[in-house]
Length: 200
View 1 (cartoon, rainbow, N blue to C red):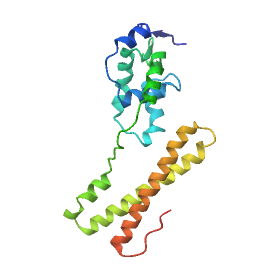
View 2: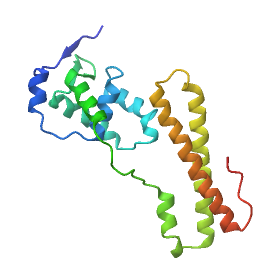
View 3: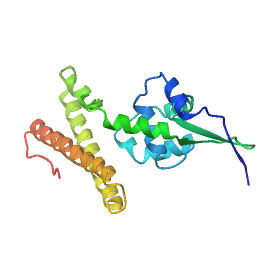
View 4: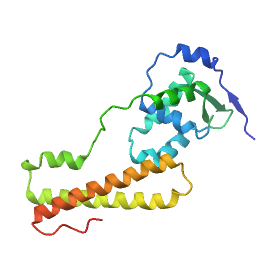
Protein backbone atom coordinates (compact mmCIF):
# COMPACT_ATOMS: atom_id res chain seq x y z
CA UNK A 1 0.00 0.00 0.00
CA UNK A 2 1.30 3.45 -0.90
CA UNK A 3 1.97 5.61 2.13
CA UNK A 4 0.93 9.23 2.45
CA UNK A 5 3.03 11.95 3.97
CA UNK A 6 1.41 15.08 5.29
CA UNK A 7 2.99 18.41 4.39
CA UNK A 8 3.80 20.62 7.36
CA UNK A 9 1.09 23.15 8.06
CA UNK A 10 1.24 25.99 10.58
CA UNK A 11 -1.43 26.03 13.30
CA UNK A 12 -4.75 27.06 11.82
CA UNK A 13 -5.26 30.05 14.07
CA UNK A 14 -1.83 31.47 13.15
CA UNK A 15 -2.32 30.90 9.44
CA UNK A 16 -5.81 32.39 9.50
CA UNK A 17 -4.40 35.49 11.18
CA UNK A 18 -1.59 35.76 8.61
CA UNK A 19 -3.89 35.35 5.61
CA UNK A 20 -4.18 38.58 3.69
CA UNK A 21 -5.16 37.34 0.24
CA UNK A 22 -8.76 38.11 -0.63
CA UNK A 23 -10.62 34.94 -1.52
CA UNK A 24 -12.54 34.80 -4.78
CA UNK A 25 -15.40 32.67 -6.08
CA UNK A 26 -13.03 29.89 -7.13
CA UNK A 27 -11.66 29.79 -3.57
CA UNK A 28 -15.12 29.16 -2.19
CA UNK A 29 -15.91 26.60 -4.88
CA UNK A 30 -12.87 24.59 -3.79
CA UNK A 31 -13.68 24.97 -0.09
CA UNK A 32 -17.28 23.95 -0.69
CA UNK A 33 -16.32 20.90 -2.70
CA UNK A 34 -13.81 19.83 -0.06
CA UNK A 35 -16.60 19.92 2.53
CA UNK A 36 -17.87 16.79 0.78
CA UNK A 37 -14.57 15.05 1.48
CA UNK A 38 -10.84 15.09 0.63
CA UNK A 39 -10.02 15.34 -3.07
CA UNK A 40 -7.25 15.69 -5.59
CA UNK A 41 -7.38 18.48 -8.15
CA UNK A 42 -8.67 15.95 -10.66
CA UNK A 43 -11.41 14.87 -8.22
CA UNK A 44 -12.41 18.51 -7.79
CA UNK A 45 -12.56 18.97 -11.54
CA UNK A 46 -14.88 15.96 -11.86
CA UNK A 47 -17.15 17.02 -9.00
CA UNK A 48 -17.49 20.50 -10.45
CA UNK A 49 -18.14 19.29 -14.00
CA UNK A 50 -21.20 17.32 -12.90
CA UNK A 51 -22.60 19.94 -10.54
CA UNK A 52 -21.91 23.66 -10.49
CA UNK A 53 -20.19 23.46 -13.86
CA UNK A 54 -23.72 23.75 -15.24
CA UNK A 55 -23.98 27.36 -14.07
CA UNK A 56 -20.52 28.57 -13.04
CA UNK A 57 -17.82 28.38 -15.69
CA UNK A 58 -14.13 29.03 -15.17
CA UNK A 59 -10.82 27.75 -16.51
CA UNK A 60 -9.86 24.28 -15.33
CA UNK A 61 -6.37 25.58 -14.59
CA UNK A 62 -7.88 27.49 -11.67
CA UNK A 63 -8.96 24.22 -10.07
CA UNK A 64 -5.35 23.05 -10.11
CA UNK A 65 -3.88 26.34 -8.86
CA UNK A 66 -6.38 27.41 -6.20
CA UNK A 67 -5.95 24.48 -3.75
CA UNK A 68 -2.23 25.31 -3.52
CA UNK A 69 -3.07 28.91 -2.62
CA UNK A 70 -5.58 27.75 -0.03
CA UNK A 71 -2.92 25.56 1.57
CA UNK A 72 -0.73 28.65 1.89
CA UNK A 73 -3.71 30.47 3.43
CA UNK A 74 -4.12 27.75 6.06
CA UNK A 75 -7.63 26.92 4.84
CA UNK A 76 -6.71 23.58 3.29
CA UNK A 77 -4.16 20.89 4.13
CA UNK A 78 -2.30 18.75 1.63
CA UNK A 79 -1.06 15.16 1.72
CA UNK A 80 1.43 14.00 -0.89
CA UNK A 81 1.72 10.42 -2.07
CA UNK A 82 5.24 9.06 -1.60
CA UNK A 83 6.51 7.54 -4.81
CA UNK A 84 4.57 7.07 -7.99
CA UNK A 85 2.94 10.22 -9.30
CA UNK A 86 3.18 11.93 -5.88
CA UNK A 87 -0.54 12.61 -6.03
CA UNK A 88 -1.67 15.51 -3.85
CA UNK A 89 -4.89 15.18 -1.86
CA UNK A 90 -6.50 18.22 -0.25
CA UNK A 91 -8.68 18.48 2.85
CA UNK A 92 -10.49 21.48 4.29
CA UNK A 93 -9.38 22.76 7.70
CA UNK A 94 -11.48 24.18 10.51
CA UNK A 95 -10.40 27.66 9.41
CA UNK A 96 -11.48 26.78 5.88
CA UNK A 97 -14.95 25.80 7.04
CA UNK A 98 -15.19 29.06 8.99
CA UNK A 99 -14.19 31.05 5.89
CA UNK A 100 -16.86 29.24 3.86
CA UNK A 101 -19.53 29.89 6.50
CA UNK A 102 -18.55 33.57 6.64
CA UNK A 103 -18.90 33.80 2.86
CA UNK A 104 -22.30 32.08 2.93
CA UNK A 105 -23.44 34.57 5.58
CA UNK A 106 -22.29 37.63 3.62
CA UNK A 107 -24.62 39.80 1.53
CA UNK A 108 -25.12 38.88 -2.13
CA UNK A 109 -26.20 42.02 -3.96
CA UNK A 110 -24.08 41.57 -7.07
CA UNK A 111 -25.91 41.54 -10.39
CA UNK A 112 -26.12 38.25 -12.26
CA UNK A 113 -23.52 38.02 -15.01
CA UNK A 114 -24.68 36.79 -18.40
CA UNK A 115 -22.30 35.76 -21.16
CA UNK A 116 -24.59 34.58 -23.95
CA UNK A 117 -23.12 34.40 -27.46
CA UNK A 118 -26.63 34.26 -28.91
CA UNK A 119 -27.56 37.58 -27.29
CA UNK A 120 -24.27 39.10 -28.43
CA UNK A 121 -24.98 38.15 -32.04
CA UNK A 122 -28.59 39.31 -31.72
CA UNK A 123 -27.40 42.74 -30.58
CA UNK A 124 -25.38 43.19 -33.79
CA UNK A 125 -27.85 41.39 -36.08
CA UNK A 126 -28.71 44.60 -38.00
CA UNK A 127 -25.35 44.24 -39.75
CA UNK A 128 -26.09 40.69 -40.96
CA UNK A 129 -28.72 38.92 -43.05
CA UNK A 130 -32.22 37.92 -42.03
CA UNK A 131 -31.41 34.29 -42.94
CA UNK A 132 -28.50 34.36 -40.49
CA UNK A 133 -30.75 35.85 -37.81
CA UNK A 134 -33.33 33.12 -38.31
CA UNK A 135 -30.62 30.48 -38.14
CA UNK A 136 -29.33 32.03 -34.92
CA UNK A 137 -32.82 31.98 -33.40
CA UNK A 138 -33.35 28.35 -34.36
CA UNK A 139 -29.91 27.32 -33.06
CA UNK A 140 -30.49 29.03 -29.72
CA UNK A 141 -33.99 27.62 -29.42
CA UNK A 142 -32.73 24.07 -29.95
CA UNK A 143 -29.78 24.59 -27.63
CA UNK A 144 -31.88 25.85 -24.71
CA UNK A 145 -34.52 23.20 -25.32
CA UNK A 146 -31.91 20.44 -25.18
CA UNK A 147 -30.32 21.92 -22.04
CA UNK A 148 -33.70 22.13 -20.31
CA UNK A 149 -34.47 18.52 -21.23
CA UNK A 150 -31.12 17.37 -19.85
CA UNK A 151 -31.71 19.24 -16.59
CA UNK A 152 -35.09 17.57 -16.21
CA UNK A 153 -33.54 14.13 -16.76
CA UNK A 154 -30.85 14.91 -14.19
CA UNK A 155 -33.47 16.21 -11.75
CA UNK A 156 -35.48 13.00 -11.99
CA UNK A 157 -32.34 10.95 -11.26
CA UNK A 158 -31.19 12.83 -8.18
CA UNK A 159 -34.24 14.50 -6.62
CA UNK A 160 -34.79 11.79 -4.01
CA UNK A 161 -31.14 11.47 -2.96
CA UNK A 162 -29.33 14.78 -3.44
CA UNK A 163 -28.89 17.70 -1.07
CA UNK A 164 -32.20 19.64 -1.29
CA UNK A 165 -30.45 22.99 -1.80
CA UNK A 166 -28.40 21.56 -4.64
CA UNK A 167 -31.64 20.30 -6.18
CA UNK A 168 -32.96 23.87 -5.93
CA UNK A 169 -30.12 25.10 -8.16
CA UNK A 170 -31.21 22.55 -10.73
CA UNK A 171 -34.82 23.71 -10.48
CA UNK A 172 -33.73 27.28 -11.25
CA UNK A 173 -31.69 26.00 -14.19
CA UNK A 174 -34.75 24.22 -15.57
CA UNK A 175 -36.91 27.33 -15.24
CA UNK A 176 -34.25 29.54 -16.80
CA UNK A 177 -33.70 27.29 -19.80
CA UNK A 178 -37.43 26.90 -20.45
CA UNK A 179 -37.92 30.68 -20.22
CA UNK A 180 -35.11 31.44 -22.67
CA UNK A 181 -36.29 28.60 -24.93
CA UNK A 182 -39.72 30.28 -25.05
CA UNK A 183 -38.12 33.63 -25.90
CA UNK A 184 -36.40 32.16 -28.96
CA UNK A 185 -39.56 30.24 -29.91
CA UNK A 186 -41.52 33.49 -29.90
CA UNK A 187 -38.78 35.24 -31.86
CA UNK A 188 -38.76 32.52 -34.52
CA UNK A 189 -42.50 32.91 -34.91
CA UNK A 190 -42.05 36.68 -35.22
CA UNK A 191 -39.40 36.29 -37.93
CA UNK A 192 -41.38 33.70 -39.84
CA UNK A 193 -44.71 35.43 -39.37
CA UNK A 194 -46.24 32.09 -38.37
CA UNK A 195 -47.45 30.32 -35.27
CA UNK A 196 -44.67 29.75 -32.78
CA UNK A 197 -42.82 26.41 -32.72
CA UNK A 198 -43.66 23.74 -30.21
CA UNK A 199 -41.99 25.20 -27.14
CA UNK A 200 -42.55 23.24 -23.94
